[in-house]
Structures are given as structure tokens and as C-alpha cells.
Amino acid sequence: MKKLLVLGAGTAGTMAANKLRRRLDPRDWSITVVDQDDAHHYQPGYLFIPFGIYDRDDVVRSRHHFLADGIDLELGEIDRVEPEACVVRLLDGRTLHYDQLVIATGTTPRPDQTPGMLGPEWRRSIFDFYTLEGAEALAKALPGLDHGRLVVHITEMPIKCPVAPLEFTFLADAWLRERGLREQVELVFVTPLDGAFTQPVAAEYLGSMLEERHIVVEPDFMVERVDAENRTLVSYDEREVPFDLLVTVPLNMGADYIARSGLGDELNYVPVDKHTLLSTAYSNVFALGDASDIPASKAGSVAHFACEVFVENFLQHVNGLAMTGSFDGHANCFVESGDERALLIDFNYDTEPLPGRYPLPVVGPLSLLKETHANHLGKLAFRHVYWNVLLPGRPIPLPAHMSMAGKHVPVKKE
Ligand SMILES: Cc1cc2nc3c(=O)[nH]c(=O)nc-3n(C[C@H](O)[C@H](O)[C@H](O)COP(=O)(O)OP(=O)(O)OC[C@H]3O[C@@H](n4cnc5c(N)ncnc54)[C@H](O)[C@@H]3O)c2cc1C
Image 1 (cartoon, protein in one colour):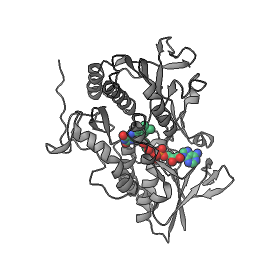
Image 2 (spheres, helix red, strand yellow):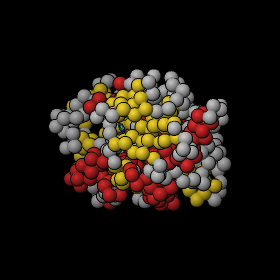
Image 3 (spheres, rainbow, N blue to C red):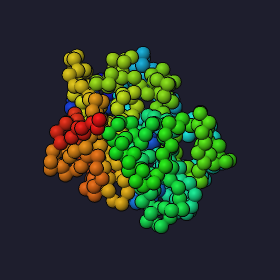
Image 4 (tube, rainbow, N blue to C red):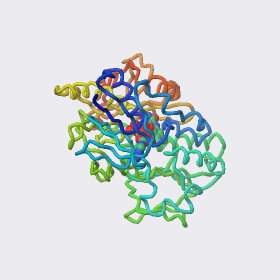
């Protein structure tokens, strides 16, 4: 009996285990998944919690519920991987052996990595919404904001769901307008990037949306520390951004056990081949989802599309065949823009987000890089698709690879 061990029962680990359970003969392969707790979080739902649209019950389910029969779930914190011995040690002393290992332990916000971020003002005037507790604390604090400066801040890239801070900013603008408070609250978007987003066409479009809404952008801001006492962000080049309420996305990092195991880069992401997801160091280790160092967005959609390619590759690999699947970095994300509208972006390693229709050319029904109500309904419906189709690993009628059908390449202005 061969052993497949999956570290992390989040989006990527759950999908991969479920898909492989259907394809690997249970007489030949056991599948074990390890996670530190039994609470699966639908993280895209955190965005809506500060605005009272979702609460904890909408975003948390037991992990057991989603793992197919024939998959063992071990609950415990991973201490280290010993890749030469093909062993994983848990903090409680348990040892798990493997023939093949899939690392899918994601990425985590680390406010401890920025001086002054944690401290007496944490969750008083300094908040995050990348954790359930942070989003819930913000839901309590936001109704108290009736004047002053609301600063939305990204510490450093890469972060998971790089559009989520923009979505938060657009939703905050709409939320303040609905309450007649927008004139009294200055809204500021502070980013280490040189604009609203990483890719030129989307950056221009999203940048103009910020401008229309009179949201001040502070670009190229590399935060050095938070001066919590004076409620100010301070950058390495000594710029200062004062705030009354700070909503920050702390530095995102892969799990610490990856560093302890000598498996990661400086942010604890596992170096892999960006097309096969196979570790560059070990031929029986793959990394899926946010845990890997692939130059794609850290997003559930990327985990999903990559997983489709990974499963076929894995089956070839363990049967001694060359892997023929090649992941193209396909990502697609809804971007909530307030007033019950949203955009959709669809892109990959080589093609930036472009305007057009999705998934079908002309018909859509979704629009790319354009605010529509249909996109907003798509975003809300996605939670049901996540729980009922994606996590169980059921087939979804969308190709894993990005398609140019329906996309328009804008003509460059002279
Ligand atoms: C606010 C927000 C909004 C988002 N919106 C979107 C969106 O609209 N669209 C989209 O596609 N994506 C979105 N995402 C990103 C998406 O949620 C992640 O990219 C996705 O969950 C990644 O899946 P993963 O399996 O790699 O990691 P995760 O789902 O985070 O799973 C990692 C698992 O590993 C476990 N783990 C970690 N360390 C250890 C350890 N030492 N021992 C044991 N277990 C461990 C964790 O408990 C966790 O269950 C959003 C994320 C956030 C925070």
C-alpha cells in the first residue's frame, strides 16, 4: 500500500484529495490529509463580514463534511517535514510516513512582521480582514466611524487575493455613502505597487474607479513601521500616512514549518516548477495553492485550475510516465465594487486581465473588466459553488486553461 499525504485541508488540499481519491485505487493507495483544526473557512466571505452581509456561520464548516470516504483526516499542527526520510512530524509527537507528499498549507497574514502593527492599538484602531477574528472585530468597529481618515493598506506583495483590499475600499466607500458619511470620512488606499493593481490594463481601469470615488491613492509605499501611538504609517523613505482607522493586509507568509524543514524561500513558499507544481528539490513532493512560489495570483481559482492539471500529472508521475499537463497560471476573480456591482478579471502567466465577456464570447453572461450587477450575483453565488462543487472536487464546466475567446485586446493609444 502506497501513502499519499496531503498537508493542509484548505481549498487546494481538499480538492486535490477528493479528486485523487476517485482516481487512485484504494487497494493501492491510502490518502491522509493533515490540518491543525476542523474548521474549513470560506475566506472570500471574510470581505463581507465587516459590512454585516455575512457572519461566521456563512463562512465556516467542518472539514470532515467535505472529505470523501476513504480519506483519513489527521488533526494536529505540523512541526516539520523530513524530506530525505519521507516523514512528517506533528507537534504532538505523531509521525506520518509518505510515498508522495502534497504541500497545501497556504499563506497566513503575519502582523508580527511589521514593527508596531501588533500592540495596544491592534483591533482598536488597527484592523485586518484577512482572518475571521479580524473581520469580526472590524464589523464591531466600523459603525463607530463617522469622521476622520480610513486608510486601507497593503504591507507587501504577494498577498492572497490581491484584489481584496480594493474590494474592501470600494465597499467601504459605498457603505459610507449609504450612511451619508462619505463627506466626513477621507478614504485612502496605500499600496507598495505603483498603481491600483499589478497589470497595466486592469491597473488603469481600477485606478480610474478609485479616482471617480475620490479615493486618495498613496503608491510605492513600503511600510517600515506603524507608529501606533500617533496612528501613523511610516515608510522606509520617511513618508507618513496618518489614520483614524487602519485596515491593513499584513505581510503574507507560508507556514513556519516549511522554513524549519528547509523547504521554502524567504517567505516560506515552496519552489516548484510553475507548469507541473513539482518541487524543484524533491521528486515526490508537490506544492499546490498559496503554499507554492508560482508567479500566479494566490487565489482559490488558481488552486482550482492548477489542481485540474496536477491530478492528471500526478497519475502520470506515480506511474513512471512523463508529466504532460502544463499549468498556465490561470486565475479569475470577481472584484466587488459596491452598490451591488462587481467586475470579473480572467488572466494567466502571459495574458493580463482584458475586457470582454466570460465564459462565452458575446453571450457572457459575465463581463470582464466591467462593473455589472450580473457579476455581483456571480460573486454571491460562488459561495454555494465553492461548498457544493469545488471542494468536493466535482467537475465544473470551465476549462483549466485560460481562453482568449471573448477577450478584446485594447488598441494602444499613441
Ligand atoms: C479576504 C479574502 C478574500 C479572498 N477572496 C478570494 C476570491 O474572491 N477569489 C479567490 O479565488 N480567492 C480568494 N481568496 C483567496 C483564497 O481564499 C485562497 O487563495 C485559497 O484559500 C488558497 O487555498 P490553499 O489551500 O492554498 O490555502 P488555505 O485554504 O488557506 O488552506 C491552508 C490550510 O493549511 C492549514 N495549515 C497551515 N499551517 C498548518 C500547520 N502548521 N499545521 C497544520 N495545518 C496547517 C490551515 O489550517 C488551512 O486549512 C481570498 C482570501 C481572503 C483572505
